[in-house]
Every structure is written in C-alpha cells, then in structure tokens.
Image 1: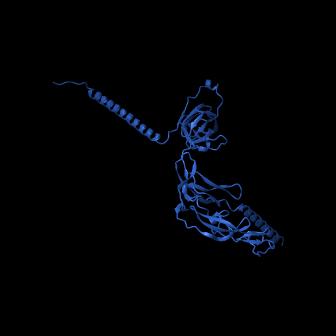
Image 2: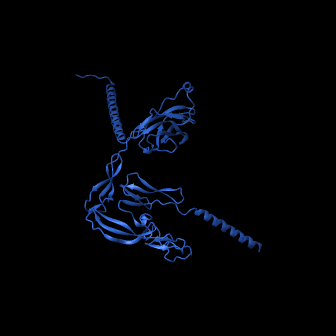
Image 3: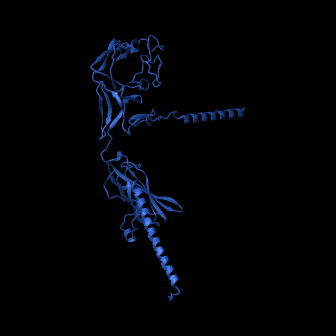
Length: 422
C-alpha cells in the first residue's frame, strides 16, 4: 500500500527543520553571550569598578523654560561625605554649542583652594548625537577616590570637568567647569606595620637599642639587649677594655685648651671627661690645641702662629668641607660630610640626623638662590638614600653670552666704519 503525500510536503518539512536549527542557534548565541558577559564582569570587578556613563532624557522645550541656562555648567553629587577608597557619582548639566555625533567628559578631583588636580584623570564617552542648543544631564557613576592624596582628608573635594563634542572627525572642547557641589573626603585611621626601623645601635646607657614603628604609626626607641656589666659597640654587647689617662691630642673648646681623659669602665660603660688644660687670654684665640696671640692679626701676613680660624684676614683656609678628609678644623658638627656621624646617626645635607625613617619621608634642601627646593634624600627600606638631585648651577650664563655678542658686534661695526673713512 502506498501513501500519497502532498507535492509541497518536502519543502514544508525543510522549512520546519530550518526554523528549528535557527532557534537552536539563537538560544546557543544567547547562552554564549551571557557567559562572556559574566566572565567580563568577574574580571572587571576583580580590579576596579568600571565607570558608568549615561544621559537622562533631554527635557522638552516647556521643561527647559523653568531651567537655569547651562553651559557645562553645573553639577551635583548626592553625598556629603565619602570614605577614601569608596566610589562617588556625579550628575553633570550640559548645553551644546555645536551639532555633534557624540560627546565625552574628562574629569578629575580638585582640592578646596586651587584648581590643581589631585587625582587621576578619567574619561566617560556618551554615544548620543546632539544638535546646537540641546540641554541634557549626563551621569557619571563609580568615580574612584583612591588616587586622592591623604593630605586632602577631611577637606572639601570638587570635580573638574572638561566637555568635548565630536564633529568634523575630531574631538572639540565645548567648555570646562569646576563643579560647585562638593563632598568631604573621610580617611580611615592610619594603619602601619609594626616593624623595626634602621639598624641596631648603642644608646648613652650602653645598651643595644633600635627604632621601632607601631601599628598606630608612632615610633619609639626599644631596648633590644641590656649590656649589663659589659660594653656596647656598633649595636652589639661586647667585653670592653676601657682606656685610662689622656687620650688623643689637645683640642679647643670655649676658647680654652682641653684634653680628653679616659676614666676606665664605670658599671658597663667606658667613661670619659674633657679636662681644662689652659684658659686662653682675652687677646688670644684657641686653635689647634693652643692659645694663639692675635696682636699681629690684620698685617696681611700669616705669622706668629696665626691660622685661618684665629685670623682669616691674614690666613686663607687650608681645608674644604666636602673634600673627604676630616681636617684639624673640621668636626662632626661643622662637617659631617668629611668627619662622619656618631652611631645611630646619618649625615644628611651636612647635618647628623637620626638613622632610620618611615616610608614616604623625604629630606629637602634650599638652593643658593633662596627659591629652589630640591629633594636630597628619600626613605627606602627604612634607610635614607640620596636622590642625586643637584641645585641648578651656572647662573644666567646666557646674559654674558649676549653681552659678549653685542660688544663683539659693536666692535666689528666700529672697525669697518673707521676703515671706510680712511
């Protein structure tokens, strides 16, 4: 027995199969798209919340009658305070002065007293065409606050906005504005890692100590080892052999000659004292461990025991701070560049400063012009490290070059004038 099918049966079956295949592809495509979006979302959230930028509907002409004229022109945020590390949203009012295919905002945070940017600059693009005269409201969501410095905690933070329109194939600046609405930045209490700072050294009591930083960021000197009935040297307890009697050369102090004497070991410390040897007279100055008469000072001759310290008008200096040699007239106080510093101190800008530092600390120096300030040292791994920054030198050399050219040119002109007259 044969069954007869309509002539268009095969064609209708083919259409049915095609529709089923098409539906399967659509479902498959939707599933893959959702999977990709989920993966993208997970990847973004792992690092930073993305900026969201969109527009509110453009108000009608009737609604615009009751609006203040705009030109990037204002804005607002719905919060009064923001914790550092959180995200903040702003609403920006815009007016367009040119037909455009799309537009964008570039924005950053500003402090209360200046127009200086205090955060990273960000960008939001709005793929909405506009015609001249359009008024709209743009929204920016998820502006990060982590890049604002801690120095602006508890201060008013404003948003600076640049508005660009895209036409004739390029971005064109429409307008810019510091948004008058602001928020106060709140910072969590400063948390520091509890850790030692710098190296071990000996204190005045002969114990091994070290600078420490605590979680509240306070610092203190901690005793690491008590060298009872022993001595301390270079941050280590040792059995000391203390000198007795005169030590080294005679030296000057308070216009008198002194000698350092060792008193031996007292408890756990080597004790010393400076003993007065000779008090110089009113007509004398102490230098090089002796009293030098000054009645010949001013005769233009470096004689009668005079030195640069006792009579600089007659005797030029025979030393220079910074020549890497600790000369007789140099000390740790007046030239630590050459004579070094005591234990627990570092020579910074020719001043003995306590060793050890905290991350972010710097040391600066005012240059000879009285205006330029340079950073000479930064804190790295809790120790001071030189930056190699140098003060500008050479003065206004270009002025002297210009003067030389003018004088040279004038001299050449005079020469040819005289020659022509002849």
